[in-house]
Image 1 (cartoon, rainbow, N blue to C red):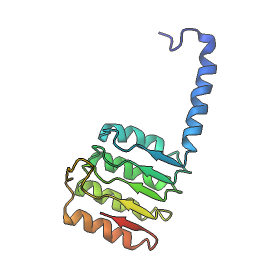
Image 2 (cartoon, rainbow, N blue to C red; image 1 turned 135 degrees about the horizontal axis):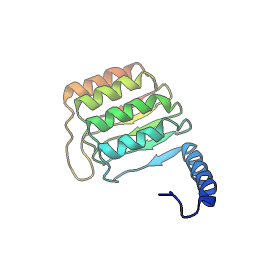
Image 3 (cartoon, rainbow, N blue to C red; image 1 turned 120 degrees about the vertical axis):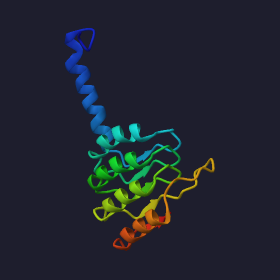
Length: 150
């Protein structure tokens, strides 16, 4: 089954998709607050984020991101060499996700602000314990310009 109605338009459409993806990867800010994204959505998004070298702000607060989504995000974070602000507060990230984020922090010298507060806009409290917070604080100590809000 052909992807497009006419085989002759396929190169044109593929070129437009490539152009749109290239423009997307040059964005400096992504704001996906309150999108009801969970681990599946963030896992897919993380594949795109590895190409976003100019991204400075990533706002994913008040979603449903858990430990597995945080782990996939942590894999992408070191590729975002210009990232300065990462807002993850109000998600469902627990100790395992916090550990993966803390491991990624050592590669993120441009990061100046990380927010992983536990209470979101609707008053839900995430699963991160004092141990998870401690791992994040310890990792942040190696980055003198990083302000962390947990």
